[in-house]
Image (cartoon, rainbow, N blue to C red; front, side, top):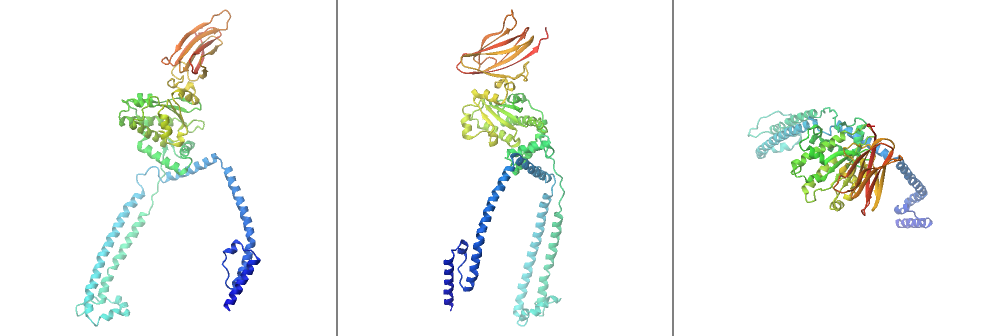
Length: 563
């Protein structure tokens, strides 16, 4: 009968398979064995096959709807909104760190007290456990020694195996010995039970001590200031916190770590005290090496550094003198940062750095370059986003392949993206691209120096073609004193100036005869002429070389007081 039923079930399954193709879900269902299971499995497969199409339709619609929502989110969130969100999150983390005093360790905190109490508790518990270990072996020895006589007695041995008598043992109070000199079971058990009370007494004091340690002590939020600005104070601190966020590509946790490291570095090196410290005798020499001068075309203060001064053995002969220079350099940087008005949204909160590599020490002086690298690293880590641009001028031929192959003394990728390298022939043009000539010191190709003309007068740039003459006209419509400054980059040209009047019957006046300007001559030509009648000053530049020359000039007029 069983075989016939199995055969029928097989026939039924074959019939079902031939009538309807099997779906994926149907394949996973195991083949039925009995007729009862056939009846159940058949409708189940039919029911599943119908909603299967509906499920596929709904899933495809859901899949289509999900990307639309994600695209809307990406479109809505702008870069400014992401930065604002990161700043708010960063401020919350800074606030939490200040409340927990994570920037600087307080003088007295609860954690050290817990650490001091825990060893004392552990020693007490260890002492008590050792006492237990010492007491328990004595009881076992009593059992062994006293059980030996009991084994000799033939009548008392069976008594110990009865459970009823053992249950009645704790109620007995007898402590005497038998006639044959052996102790009874009651006496032995009383000696064993007497060890247990110390266990109950030892655990109680431990619980009391832990409850006392668990009492927290309230902590006041610490006050942290950087560059004279307290954190989380006002919009000034927002500008500072944003610098740390930008330095870490708006990764909030990394920015918080950087901020904590900067605060710790300032505390260890006593930066606030260093700002007020008096400079040493070497200051005059240091100021020739690093100084601020003028602003760039966008209004950023420019800081110049001359690496060639490191060749001065009197200043940089040992580590002690190098460290003196580093402290002075940090002091200068700190004063420049504190001079920024962080509350003014239009104020520039970063600098342009111009590094002059003329006569810089070679790669053979590894100790010196290691010091330079260490100093630059300190500025990168503790003065983030204070460089809007880095101009490396007069870069020697050996440094360019070194920079491309092995990297630079600037290690931060974000800072390196702001760097511009220029050789000796392109240095002046590179500087003038970002800084106006009237703001550039004469040392670096500009016209800025202590003269009667101020930096307020705009400098005009012109190019003299090879083998050609170039004239400059400075008008004077009335009696005045006309002053001008002129510089030809690369020199090796002829210069001359004369006054040409516009009044009939008057004569032209030669102001400066034509003369050759060499590389050893004064780079900036300063001249003036007292004009008594309307006319103009005509300056002639004669370039007989095969290279083009750049000319920089500016002028101003002042009313004459001697008329």
